[in-house]
Image (cartoon, rainbow, N blue to C red; front, side, top):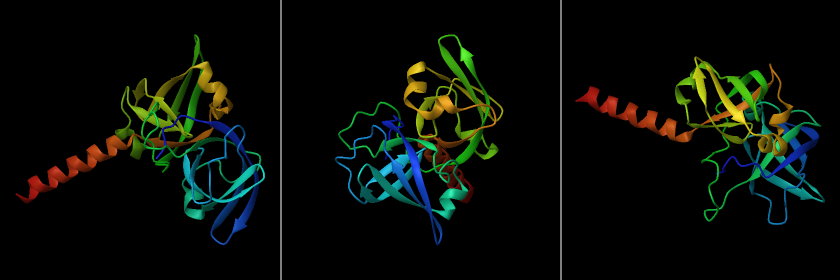
Length: 203
């Protein structure tokens, strides 16, 4: 589990083809790897990945073809990625509960200054729209954000300058693709409602 509070910006230094995916070697930037061991989870660009090797000042992860097909931005050397180590049960939850399992790929519709902050508008896949609520939480490229408005399949968030300074969201522009993870509470509510409806139908 993660919180969506980014700890560092890393860089994909090298990619190597595997039989069914890619091996990525990532430079951690300012992320402290002192307590990281092989088998630990690190979220890169919102995707939960398992550390397979530690060497000098980099770490390696394997990414399956299935993961590559349903996410964005993990297949090119030189790409910048938001990094977060898995949370401990004793950690403060400053963002929201994030699984690191991307639900879909969104597209930036608008990104512009808005007073002291920036307005980011993203078009989500139609299948995810029902899980996105005003004042609810959403994860964009691993960053925990609060939804400020919704119009059809598009939702908007306000980004403060600090968020832009410590994440890769400052690189976004209209047309850019982003990894989205909806609030898992919304999915559990849907599951609960479906179960109740099924029970009502049976009785």
